[in-house]
Length: 157
Image (cartoon, rainbow, N blue to C red; front, side, top):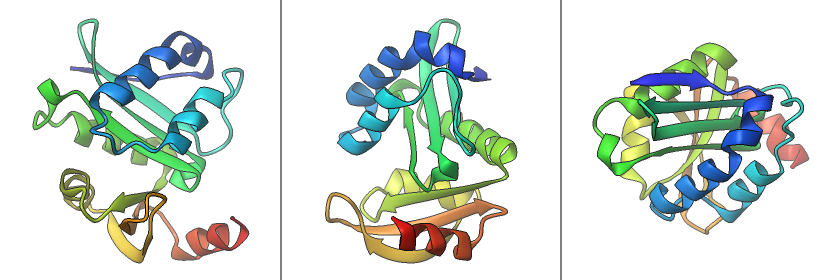
């Protein structure tokens, strides 16, 4: 399994494929807002806190992870069903935290696989809210995250 961080220049080549992959393998958990964000992501330069990486086996896409503004704006991961339980998500997530230094995610409480992944990697739940689809949602932080940074962002947005 090869993982690769994508540069803004490489986004142009992968964007449509990642969007289709999200629709096919995101188990209807990726919001339309998140997909619109990916569609509009600037391919000339990424804003601070943006991270995009893929995992592939030979030429086959196994999964990808994406963070916007350290996850404060957007954060999601999609892994092809054939590659689940093969540590693809864990590896992508670990690399994200290593590269960004800190990450924030919002996970619906009924999304057991994502919650298990987050807790297995040591992310800490620190806030409970209602997500964009109206579901109870946990806010989690990993790496050198700060509840104060999250709360400041939430006040503005």
